[in-house]
Image (cartoon, one colour):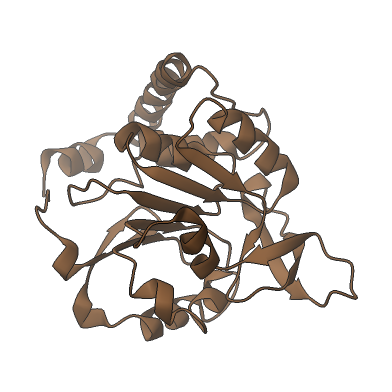
Length: 248
């Protein structure tokens, strides 16, 4: 057990909470200066997402990369895109976010960064029409479900194959997915082409909302071709042949 874990184990709970609060405050001040346009909406889940990314470092990878293309599925208001931009400034980042209020803040966050693009759509396994569903858990918990065109829809779907084609890149170096259960559909069909071109997957699985998300993922990948890590709520899958220098 490392020193960090030892501290967490023996430190009283109130001190841990105080420590996180102090780190969060300094983190907000630091990134407000660094990013200029950091928006944290009051009385929303923004602060929780900010902490998970910038305080608890849930997107940190156990391998050194120089990614050319990052696809950020379920980009929320852009914190993950900003994190990747700071860490990999030469990469192209394509954000996908379906919900309108989140997308509007996302656009503000990336407005000064020419390497970050945003698409207002829902990730799905085929071209179709989607309805946005409010699951009642806050701004981070909007999901999508397929509807026919004749039914009132909120947003069009986009496939990963289409995003890769739009990017002009050959491979997806990092595919980050936090799409509130839509991963079940994404890994159930039409995944073969883009999956073989993907080197790293960072995914939050939502079996607690939609049964079968994990089963769909692990049925789609060939487990012996990937190394698996966990960071907070994120599962990180890295192709073995892609790893050059692990930083464990």
